[in-house]
Length: 256
Ligand code: FPP
Image (cartoon, rainbow, N blue to C red; front, side, top):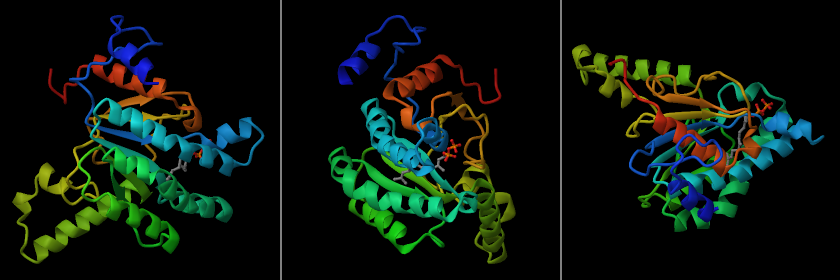
């Protein structure tokens, strides 16, 4: 894998799909990923949907290491949305149990790589075992200064925006904030991602072309990249291809 990465970094043919050329001085600081297609990946193989989620979980560390290797600072993974509670009870339960399998399995290597775990979402209504697993990982990595691996768990963009507006109104009412002080920057600090840069690149797997209520405020100027690959089969090569394409785009933020 690292030989492959070295090859890509040294590759002169920038447009070559199979060997993307990466420039290490223009790596997106924050990449957000909608890990979609676990269910279809499993169905294609005659497996239960949860087998797809399990395989998807296994892919998280691989892509985290790929991101870390090129200097990405923040990786936000959409692991469970506020809408996902509507899924069958058994599937929700399985998804909720993933953190307690993932962290004991992967935390040592993540710590070695100086990765810091963070969560974006509502802790209320998560089962104790889910919350304990993630809080333990956050605690154990709190002094790490490397890549931030941010799990969007029980997260919904509209709910986040409404909660942010409610907090703003409360602060105005209590005299802590004057309405004219509310700038884009101040408002960002009312979001659950407070302190993180906005994503530069959003990746969604499985061919769906939607945001699905993900980081609605934060994605305003984000470059979007979609692939047909299902999340469990999303490889380092897909990842580097997405970054290479990001590097070929000119970001104008509404200007010329
Ligand atoms: C969407 O695929 C995926 C999810 C709702 C869950 C994603 C979670 C993981 C990959 C694991 C996260 C890991 C940890 C440690 C929390 P889908 O089920 O909607 O797929 P489909 O559209 O093919 O049905």
